Length: 310
Image (cartoon, rainbow, N blue to C red):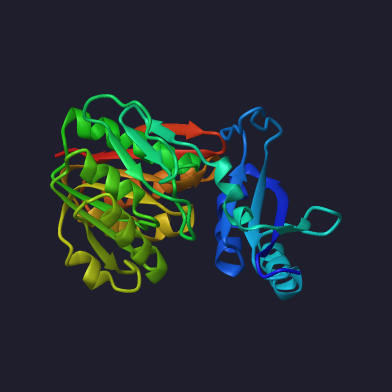
């Protein structure tokens, strides 16, 4: 084995699990992770149509060092790697560590919001559009997931109709939603996450795109006083999961200003009604007038848009 040997591994998972699986693998053992699904088209090939995604990754460590750990972590997520689901092959050559890049191409998330990996040519854009240079990494959120697209579309439309002055991104991940808000002209944008790695990634990504955003390592549930100290916002976007969204409903409701907007995602279609009831209930308990303005679906995922009417 030469010093520049690499291992390529791939496994098939349901599309809705692909982002979480790739993030886990990236943190455990990978130099790079690629997701191939219905929205990913490699030149000369067709996108997948079977509801599954192929997660492919490269590692400079032999499988003996990481296979059991990865298998155990994935099993906790409901992904079994036995029965030939995981395939591993050894590769030689310096170029292999970059071979996964062919699976990534510029993404258009809405009419004015685009994401381009640093090694790709930027797309043709409308006047006033935002193109983020954002490379796939360890933290969640490079624009591929349905929930990111749903939230981005709402941000784009709200910034077109009546630009919010103060915007809060809860669970910022790589910072993509906060960066779109800032790029579209929102004056004050704050991004928070309870994961140090996510905050670090967000700072780096914003710096790469020359966007000035206030990033905070903050858990709203663990430090409610710190959250309240952030003040009121015209738009709050939270793309996390249904359970923490429900738990945070009183906090997010108190943080949105009169006439403000709340956009929530990370919600499976089967969970949408429970999340909506939590926010409407919290509003009624506090004498507010929060109303669900719109509900959108992309695949198995849903985004909710609320308005706090005066």
